[in-house]
Image (cartoon, rainbow over all chains, first blue to last red; front, side, top):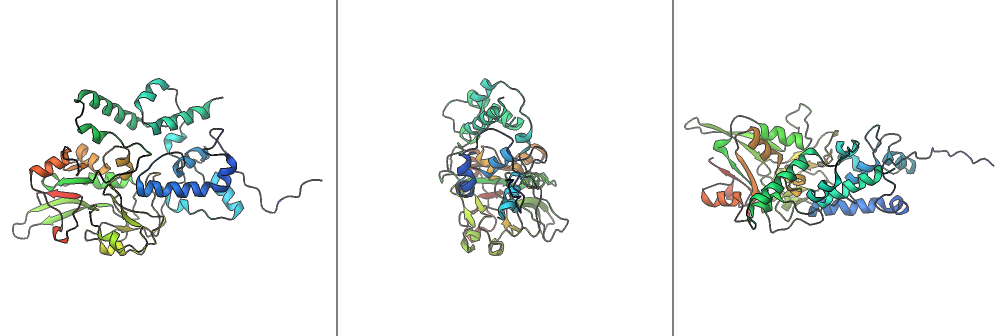
Length: 135
Length: 241
């Protein structure tokens, strides 16, 4: 029997970078808001700027390469949130666009020299980018 | 590439500096960023020293600040946000005119924090006074309380925010001392611009570190707070006004 078409179209969210989120997908689907909420207080009040659970990191990975944004009809955040009828407040203040350097395709550079010279955060980011580009 | 050209250059410069200077010299401390997982501590207190005699007619600090933080106006000066502004002082007796940049003074005893009903206005451990816009309800008590008129209310929807400087309608905002840059070991955008294109009137540093240039210059020659009578112990000090 053919599946009955849904009254509301299913979200079309897609991921574009990497093959693994910062936490298991099931965990992120259910609890991403808690991770972001926790990180936001750490960052604003204590100045802890680890990348892993930051909103900026979400956006840098999940932004649509065409629009550069997580919003819009097929945007990663908006398509699911409109399906679930949950309003997102984040983007009243926060930019919904990925940082230009995150969108730009990484140019091949010698990893060795960078690893020595850069702080951990940059390495974390660079490794992730490298991983996402592996065939 | 995820690392900007500027970051790479900055780190390169820091590395060169570290090799040239003798070990143990505290000058290097300033150039080195706190690691991202480390919280800001009260061992530091960030501040500015502004020499009004060096401050000329330009407004590169204002432009640089608003560019860095994505502060854009709507052509309505009465309500547009301003994080930093140029103030003109005139001596009525002699007619002598001078200008100086005025922004959040990052008080040790900030009145904006005292009056905030939600705890949105707060002082970070390292002395930077900020608004947590997540819990700001836009009541604007802090704007009333601030003797420096340093805070602005965002009246209209914002677009084109910078990823590092979220700003939105219905919240109060002010100079953050470029906290995102400071956390990365850099100096505020206004200071950088003033040193590059302006009169080299601004100096940023750690007031609690006796070896820092700002602490040494403050110790060597007189400086003043604006409205010292309020006993707020501002983090921004002025000279020659």
